[in-house]
Image (cartoon, rainbow over all chains, first blue to last red):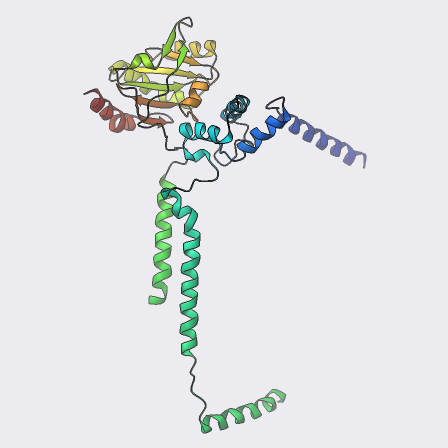
Length: 158
Length: 174
């Protein structure tokens, strides 16, 4: 039991050390820091590519967050800062791709697929309905059907 | 057979797209700087810190700007080729020492040979941001009007030098 307690303590200490490393302050002003983090969350770290600028600890990400916070201090709007970054790193830095002719497929492709899928489903259902014969049973067929229905329970009992 | 024709066709198309995607290097991001004026900078020179180097003073020349650092492992891989370029005088080669210390940078050049006509020191990486640098080494080919014509992310290979850079240098020098 003592040992488990010690392990738990060590584990907690580990977490403290971890968070101490992650919580590197970007700015003294918490409002500004919030704004920097909000914008960085929309931007891709080019070094790690699958991380946001906010989450990345890569050197370049740290530099870019510093750049963003400086530009915000200088009174630039989020839009101006995004323009600054895309002029240098391209639309690739944006996690939310812009709607341009090159990204139409990306934005509207899924909806096009949905429409095509619905069309195929409609055609399939229509075809299937046509396969069901609409002719009423002839007297002979009706007699046979009744016979089969009567025979069925007996068979089951046996 | 015809039952499977459509799914098979869809599958083949999907595989083709995935194969093309696999062939792409995910680290190469298309640069918006191509065919745009190279951002100007004024930075201290590495060997003579009291002197500056500006991109503007290179107007009228086709030149290569190679972003390097003493801490950069891939730069070591690229280095022999840079020495080769410098030796052949095919195109003037200038360096941008990115986020480095002067001592480390000088030590590395002394140790392995200096292929650059001169290097500028971008200690805090701000000029790097202006150029959209995200993976050292990077190399920019800049024309007489100061327009970026080509960008290489990662080490230049002999093949890239022969097939891409040198023909472009020839064309731009006309």
